[in-house]
Length: 232
Ligand code: PGA
Image (cartoon, rainbow, N blue to C red; front, side):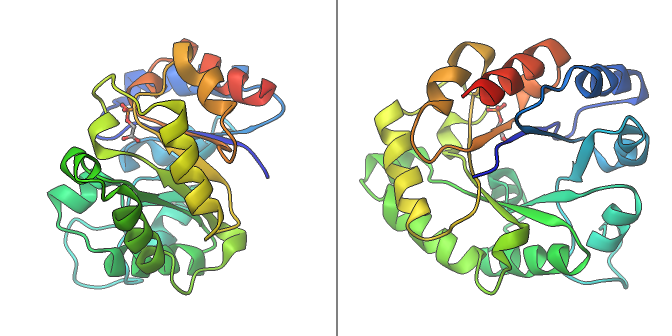
């Protein structure tokens, strides 16, 4: 399975921060794909460094009266090869359902992009023993009708995002094995991946890479994670 180190800059990054992306492009190791998803305002300038870049969301429609939204074709036109859809922050902040996520991913693929579909349980759902039910329902509805050749799935426990907390390696293995039985595409783990825990996470079966938030903002940290993946 191909390996992908993906950085999600979320709502961070001004022109002055392009130097970090330039450094990531210059230092990206052989042996895995390296991707940065900057804010859309930086997409075209980031793409110019020769690194793979992606959007963080797209609209399900190709064009029209949707103020503030971006179509997948616009992202592709700006140089994107990927787009994240269904990130838990989008699902929570914008009420996105798995059906909407599937429609966005379909639009992404239609524009020639690879969709990175995110799934993951909340802390309350994990505590209630419902992790596999929740992730199973999300994956079934979010990837319906998609082309596996242009699909990546990211497992991101909501409670591990930006918190410094991570599941145990056994818990990651359980969910990734569960997902592997359902989709034969690269599976990323996301949620507080850092240089210090990357190697052990990449050694977990069915983990083919990471979706990295905070630690992707600094080139040294993100390159350390990418190098751990390349060596895994
Ligand atoms: P984090 O974010 O690495 O800052 O926890 C991960 C994500 O939301 O993709």
